[in-house]
Amino acid sequence: MVTRPMAPPIYPAAVYRCENPTQAARLLNREDAGYVYSRDAHPNGDFLAAMCRDAHRLPEGIICGSGMAAESALILGLLQAGDHLVASNLLYGQTTNLLRNELPRLGITSTELDPCDLDAVEAAFAKTDHIERRGLLVETVSNPMLRVIDIARLAEIAHRHGAWLAVDNTFASPGICRPGALGADYVLESLTKIINGHSDVLLGFVGGPKEPVERIRRTAITWGFTPAPFDCWLAARGMGTLDLRLDRACANAMTIARWLQHDPRVAVTSYPGLPEHHDHQLAARQFLDGRFGHMLSVTITGGWDAATRFIEAARRIPFSPSLGDLQTTLSHPASTSHRKLPQAERMRYGIDDGTIRFSIGVERVEEIRAAIEEGLTALTVG
Ligand SMILES: *Cc1c(COP(=O)(O)O)cnc(C)c1O
Image (tube, rainbow, N blue to C red):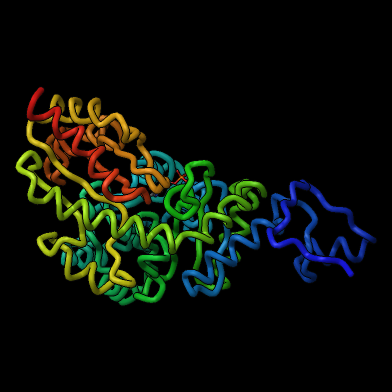
């Protein structure tokens, strides 16, 4: 009797053998289940897509080669020249770059607005200028100040105006928020971050209703946005421990936030789990299992120089402008993700030169606290 492996196999094959012309045609037309060419589909991609789709309780989902490939597949799959997108002004930098510098060349334009200002969103859709406002694109939690958006109300506004709502849920993951359950039509995620969780893969996910996601799948295949098998295998392994890692990382973030909040060397602590956070009530309603995420931002007084002293002294916390690793990492928005924003605009979003963003990991919380303390000590004695 043949035994089956506990770990899923990895299928590196770029192409598969067909038995005969009829089978080849049926497989290529997707009339039969099976694989022919791995840009179209492969077992590791399908396995991971099913995990992500089920985690979000969505009817269909596809994996793309990166989070940005997922954003591109969604927009290029659903929109055409002449269409207009209403988008958050707090999106991931490359998403904003896509909207501002790539899509206009294809005739797809967008409006950027504050997604926390529901009147502004309503006004953008209510305009009567014969422009087709087809969709609304927002993020569950903004970077780096961690504003939380009201998915249910944004969905209501978009739907009333005949548009869809797509939510980039990367900072939350399905362990903290399922935008589909709150009314969003499409969910996007960079699996590169907390979902894979080990900083060794770039991948993305798009989920939603069956028919439009099939259209997005065809777009992804044609433009070449599809993923590599080994990356999918790694991310599926990451998915297996997502819930455990979130339990630990979110509890750590809550403890660290409560501690930093009372430290005189820290001017502002931004964490949706703190009752003082602007969107705490909304986060408590929208987020699952009493978790508030692994992301936490602080602003220390003394601007760029103070941030530099902190980062150089906090040697045990890598300055690594991404998120979601097992280890606690930090980033400095003013020199990385938000470096191109004029300072006045940055300040408007509360992003100071002294703002430091932490991605809290799964270490013992005392270790994280000690590592942050090393940075803070440099502020008082430096
Ligand atoms: C990282 C990130 C992306 C892009 O994902 P990649 O996998 O790096 O292409 C998109 N949105 C958000 C919110 C992200 O953090």
